[in-house]
Each structure stands twice: as C-alpha cells, then as structure tokens.
Length: 116
Length: 110
Image (cartoon, rainbow over all chains, first blue to last red; front, side, top):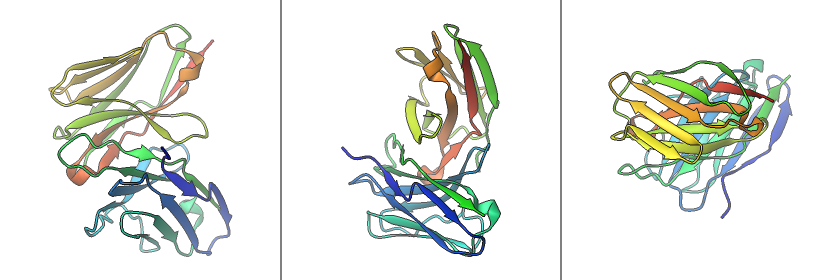
C-alpha cells in the first residue's frame, strides 16, 4: 500500500518568509511525528500527534514553528519568518499508535528546506 | 529525556563484517530499532529487537542487546557496497516518542 508522503520534496525560500510543509500519513495510522535533520546531524524530534489528544510540542525549537493535524489524516508543519538555521530536511513519520505493542514508525521521504 | 550515542563513522572492506554500536541511558524502552538511511532517501526500518531478548538474527543482520551495559549493536555480515548508508539506532521513550542516535555513516570500500 501507499507509504508516508510529503510535499514539497524541495523548498527554497528567502529568509523571513513563511513556509508550509505537508505530510500524508499511512491510512489508519493514528500517530504522526515530525522530525528535523540538519546537515551532518542526527534526527531531532519536533512534535507528535496521537489521535485526538493534545499534541506533544516539546521538541519545537521556537514559537515560529507550529503544526496542525486534521483528525487522523494530513498534517502541516508551518515555519514562520524562516531563518537560515531552519535549513534542514524535515521528516514525517506515522505509526499505528499502539502503546501496548511494538509500534514501528514509517518515514516519509522528507522535505529539504533551504533558507537563503 | 533519553541520550542515545553512536560513533559517527565506520569504514570496512567489502566482504568483511561491520559492527555498529549504540549506547543509551534509559533502559525502559520496550523495543530498540535500527534504521537505515541511504543517500537522498528517507529512513527505512532495518530491524528491531524486543527488550527481553539478547539477540536477534535476520539474514545478514545480527542485533545484540546488553541491557546491563545499555548497549545495542548491529552486525552486518559479508558487507556489500550497497550497505553504505547512515545507520541510526532508536529507542522508544514515554508515549511512543522516539529517541534517535546521531547516526553512524558506514563506508564500504570495494
């Protein structure tokens, strides 16, 4: 079946502009995660949605970052007034959301954001 | 939170075995994972091990878990050039939050 998809695959923007990144999770997956991977660094957790619960925003680096999710479907990550240090690959993952069993996360291909 | 550490680079010759190591601080994770990231591609789940196991073998891959030392390793037998990638270990913390290591870049020389 279809995996996690993200759009756009690449985004180049000017410093100070707002950007919106989209994630389409695997159908039926209640949990959705956003991560950031800066060049030469590991994955950095940003935000986590689980069903209708309040999202875990503990990883968002500043108030310029926000994310929404419509029910158990599409999520958008918005970065306002982008800065050069926001340049990174933004990865989305989804999982079944089971807390009782192994809950594998499946990753999308990522959006490469470049802030000039 | 969880600290997950990996060495950054590993270089091996084709046909040799590769061993990628990972250490962590929190021992409450039920499952421990290895992900592979090839150049220009997303993360791919490679294998995982349940925390009550010491070892799991899957074809050329062997995962070893030492809970006492909080050490996880991935052994790739007969390493091929196609195995060149970045390998991340990952643990689940509270509420299914994943903690990833910084990744080990495996370079396989022909």
